[in-house]
Amino acid sequence: MYSDEDSDSSHSIIKSYSRYISKPYLHLYDEDEARAREHAAWRRRDTKDKPHEPFSLPFSTHVVRHLSELRALHTLTVRDCLVTENVLSGSELDGIELPVYNLCLRFTSETTNMWHILPLCPSLRTLSIFSPFRFDVPVPSDEVWTRCRFFPHLERLTLTHIHSSSLNDLAFALLSVALVSELHITHFKLHTMYGVRDAEILFLLRAIQNAPIEVLVLEGLAEAEPALFSRIGECFESTLVALTLIRRASIRQVGDREITWPRPTWKYAPHLSRLTKLQHFDWNSFCPFTTVPSSSLLDFENGFLEILTDMTEKMKAMVTLSA
Image: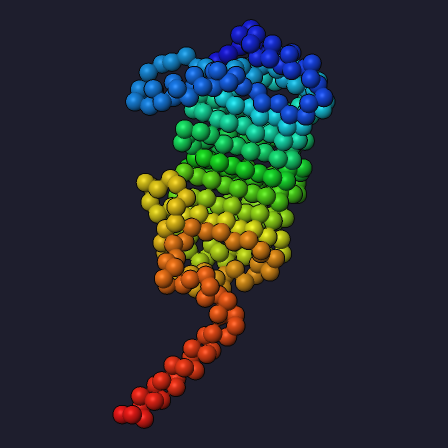
């Protein structure tokens, strides 16, 4: 673990940035070190248990103090930084807060303690969590969530590469927040590398059901039964405008390719009838064009189905007469 005495490099980076105090955004990482990290990650893929020296810049109390002085700063991206012991304990921060509204954290297996940056940002409106190298990010402990004060203001939440085994912890955290304060999340995206059972997704939906969700993205469904569609319709019938659902066919599938869903399309459609404001719907259900071309929708709307039924009945009648 880094200490503040080891943080000269990050300290100098923030001090040099202070000359441009009018700029509203900051990417906190060292590009050369990030490239070295990427190269090292590939070299270590077969030697995970061997000790190695981390490349990360330290996120120290010096960094926090300088960032807090940049009053025009509203967007902060922190990539692959290790949080120092003094920041973890908060012993030297004296109530210092970061003025950012938009925060993006990029995790690796060595920098999972970056979750402790969240309590320093009480005014967040947008929070994005992601990870490269196909590393699943574990959800932090309750001790971190209880110190976060941004939830009453948070509007957009993106959680990418979240570890599927941590979803219940995430749901419990959001549910605890919803019990004491009103959620204002309008955009919610959850991405998991491997498929998640419907029961866990339903529990997560319960935690955010009172939020005014307008855009909902769930990438990483394992089962995706019609009951899940029904629950989404119940939770967000008066607010949801856009919905994206991505199912995983097996644990080997990590991309978002088209696959066969467990039920035919017409089994799912009625469960979305409650979503009267829905304008955009996307899912990775494989639908052969030879079976149902998109142009058929116009024919159905123009009464093609009734015409086809009449023609079928007439043909049956002609066959009966000829017999």
